[in-house]
Image (cartoon, rainbow, N blue to C red):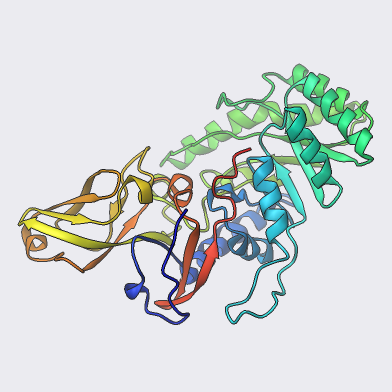
Length: 386
């Protein structure tokens, strides 16, 4: 468990104890406005349902829910995350400790599967407290959910999940999706809300290529919607998209929600193909050693950067590159003027390669505005895997 030194509100960001995950709220708000405004300019009435697993922070979710064109609810990956966000929504304090005016987070879509008996019992218990939906791709799972919902006296929302080519679950074809949707509509205790999918990462720089690939992956989902509605089965929600292709998805007729996740904070993995955003999340680290001219060592390693998919990028030092990480430390290779800089006790900032892996290393986000600490925001979703 992280044990930070809680410095007072108003402390300069550069004086925060390290390693620390720091979020610039001004940049975050700008990123949120960019995506929500673009989705709102789409072809139909398309809303943003933030996928909050990327940052795990209820305070950040409140900024997203308060933005224009918000769906009024969030998406998560697991039941435990849904429980954490539902519990946190009405228990967020202002910077001065006063009671929060934030709304409860009481509309949640679980985009992952909930299949074991113990978890299904927890699921229906939560469904008695908030508006809750869950994705399904299996007939037996539908039957188990229906039995538990009936026994608990609740109605559980269900979205049929379709595989759009990513291969991480979802029914494989239009006929299979239609058949499963009919099973849901026939089951007591369940309410068919619609269809969802995740197209997977689409890091394409060429706009035409991105549009073509997005349309190719989503066409079976739109075909399923048409088939169901022609059969008299209402499809209220078609939830798809991500930060990679939010602007393309919002232009497709039939889509009702964009499930974007990384956009408030961003990471290097996504920034390379979506340059209209800026990195709002950075790992603040301290140089602890400069043993030779060509190398410096910082106090941020695997345990604080989550570099499994790629190393973080060092900001603002010409000639200095973050190259490798041990469990506790990071190595900066230096050349040119950087060899005379980055001495012990200097601070550096690293932009994470993959946001979700990095955030999951921390219990708290240090929220900063105009270079000053606003508060310590709990990462309620950290470790909530079940």
